Amino acid sequence: MAKRLLEQEQDQIDRERREEAYRNEQAVKNMINEDKKIIERELEMKTYQCFICFDEHPIEKIYTLDECFHRFCNGCLEQHFSTQIFNGGVKNIRCPDPDCGRLVSYHEVKHNVDTSTLSKYEEFLLQISLSEDPNFRTCPRSNCNTALIGDPDAPMIVCPKESCKFAYCFNCKDAWHSDITCEQYKRWKEENDQAERKFQEWSRANTKPCPKCNSKIEKNGGCNHMTCKRCSHEFCWLCLEIYNKQHYSSSKCKQFS
Image 1 (cartoon, one colour):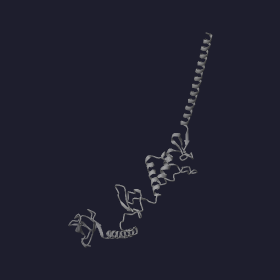
Image 2: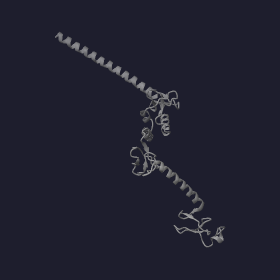
Image 3: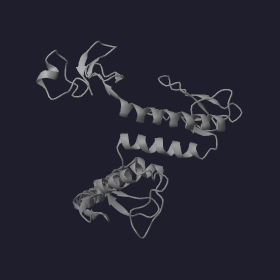
Image 4: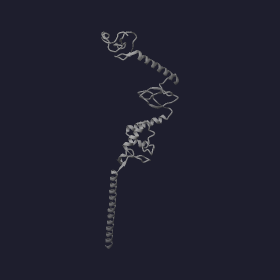
């Protein structure tokens, strides 16, 4: 009987010790959680200075660059990166700190620009990478510029863009010219351009546009009463006004000159 009482008493002591240990453990946890909350509140209230604008910003608006660990606010970094991208310097974007100059990574740019700027950044990177290939070509047609890798053994290139399909030469990068060399095509084009310029000069000196349909009209006689062969519009060669029977008697224009 005495042994059983001793055992019950010992069990009670052990239980009390476990309960006390649990209370102490909970008290320590509560102290740690309270300290953690205090630290979090302090961090939330703490601000960091941007090395560009020198304003103070909360931690969520500050970005720390890898390796060099220089801190800048998101707004300043976005403006810095975007300016470099749209100026074409996508392979030379560096840390804004003047004493650093470390090249930033794709990851750092991606996290600090909007989606449209990122797309432009990726497009420029691709173009630069392609342009380093000696067989890189872009469609010479205006408003196209579709990029591709050509083949010097197959000099005729057809633009793959469905709305373009312009055929051009791999070697001279001009319109495709079958059966003649690039040099021959160049000479022909220069002669053609000269002839076109001469025609334009003659046209400006000897023709006028019809006031109604804008067709070029050459005056081949002395009478200033003109009739457009295209739209039959009648007008005065001198003032381009609509012709009527009283025009030359009621205006300063002469019928013959």
